[in-house]
Image (cartoon, rainbow, N blue to C red; front, side, top):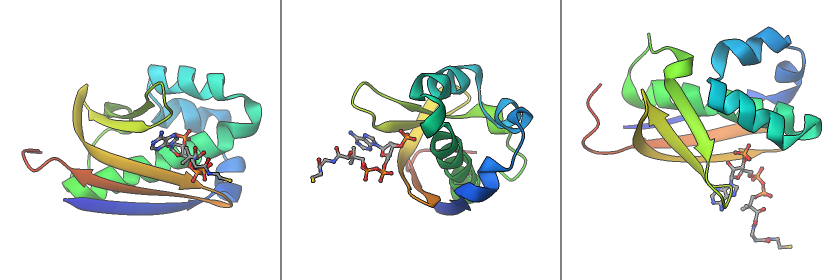
Length: 110
Ligand SMILES: CC(C)(COP(=O)(O)OP(=O)(O)OC[C@H]1O[C@@H](n2cnc3c(N)ncnc32)[C@H](O)[C@@H]1OP(=O)(O)O)[C@@H](O)C(=O)NCCC(=O)NCCS
């Protein structure tokens, strides 16, 4: 019930804008825009790492990336949702790489 992933932000920089539209929910796309251009790559890298970490933790290898949402609260702390329900804890960090850890709630059933 634990998952992790690391993403090189240089690789994210090279992706097209359609990549963000493909993996981010509408709410995440709005949140990314609010971060401002400079931080969009970090935001997207962190979400990609977080979603991959969720897939590893849950074993849901076929999960749709848009069904996994990672949204920040007013303090900036990220929260992890699957199909609209909060399903565990997530922590994200970024520098040249984005890194995420996920721990699912014990009651989570995939
Ligand atoms: C919030 C804080 C912990 C972020 O750490 P950072 O090293 O600046 O940045 P990182 O790349 O490691 O982490 C960024 C991610 O932290 C997460 N984060 C932000 N605020 C958070 C909070 N209140 N709680 C948990 N996670 C938080 C977010 O996921 C963010 O990425 P996102 O905006 O793309 O979702 C940091 O800015 C902070 O406030 N630290 C408090 C101590 C301090 O001020 N130290 C400096 C003394 S010189």
